[in-house]
Amino acid sequence: MTDDTTTGAAGPATRTTRDLTKAAVSGWLGTAMEFMDFQLYSLAAAIVFNQLFFPEVSPAIGLIAAMATYGVGYVARLAGAVYFGRMGDRIGRKRVLYLTILLMGASTTLIGVLPTYATIGILAPILLVVLRLVQGFGAGAEIAGATVMLTEYAPVKRRGLISSLVSLGTNSGTLAASGIWAILLAVLTEEQLLSWGWRLPFLLSFALMIFAVWLRRSLKESPVFEERTDVVDGRALSRSELAEERGEGVLESGLRQRKGRAFFLALGLRLGQAGNSGLVQTFLVGYVATTLLVDRSVPTDAIVYGSVLGFVTVPVVGLLGDRLGRRPVYVAFSALTAVLAFPLLLMITSGSTVALVIGMVLALNIGVLGLFAMESVTMAELFGSRTRFTQLALAKEVGGILTTAIGPVLAATLTAVTGSWWPIAAMLVAYSLITLVAAVLSPETRGRDLVRLEDAA
Image (cartoon, rainbow, N blue to C red; front, top):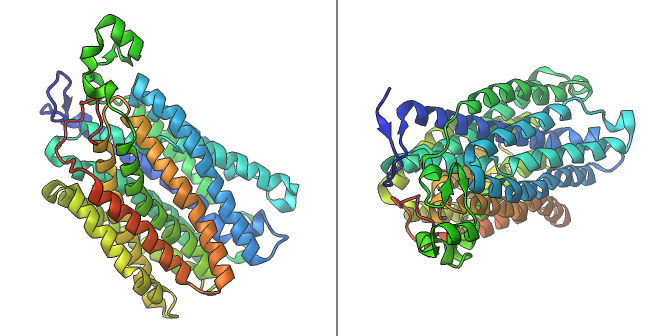
């Protein structure tokens, strides 16, 4: 097909429908791989890692240790966000996305061949942490890069819908990982799962990495990056180079604008989705199995069902964002999550399997996927093109450290101390209210020209 698809900004760079399709598939696949890798790890941490790598402690302490090991990857993600984010703003989005997927795939595959505590002792959890750090370093800019690339490719009137494909990538990865674990739990005995079965999901990710690398080799650069006034021959000029060669006036308000407000607004938008995700998709799976003593397949199946429903939730929310604007949709979903937090936790802890599954499905779609569908496009639109990749990656990863990394550990500690589920609901309310405030304070970004160098706020 040859019909041109542009970003909606005036400029020479155009992309065909085929280019847009390839960018969409690449962004979806890379994000799916990132979240599959992380969900494989998070479920393994919740289900078996406490026995494989921390066997000499009580089940409660083992769960806390496994969650902490899960969390250290978010420290590496922050370093990766800074390193690859700056690289993506300087030399383009495409090259960075090629490197990040290589790092993620290699580290995830190696986790699948890692010796356990029974084989090499304390060295096993140490190596697990090292691989988790490498995995996190590569993943730190993957979802930000995919979000930036897809948002900058999308036609302005369909930007919310097309950018939501990044969220579908996360959903696809979550579904694949949860589905794999559900199958393993259904067909393998406890002995088989602990001896060799847990390795299979990590080894399977290798094939996905090979396909993703092949696809990204032929991907064209973002048209917005090419249209930037500060980019010459595929590289962004420094402030001094721009001042010397073109004069300061060429940068207009892009370089003179004081940074900060847009970043903190984006961080607030991020906290609700990331915090809720850590609680619903990571902590609750382990809590239901180890504390409520429900069969481990039940919460895993609930995540699978919720992810399937997410294939409807995400594009619908993206369409609503294109029709109604980003702010009203954000306000609605964050407020709804805060209102439903305690009722949903009552369902999950009621003792009824049906109520548990319905509660987790609703929590995943309203409090996680619904917010994520808006996050993908809104955070990208908040930032100017010169620092979009860096600021977006930092906002996502700082938010991840403050919530997804720390949240499950805090929830495990609070539930152990109180002997109750109410701290989980209270944390869901707190995360959602932070995002609600940020949404109210944010400017409406629908239809913004993404080539502009300055932030929207």
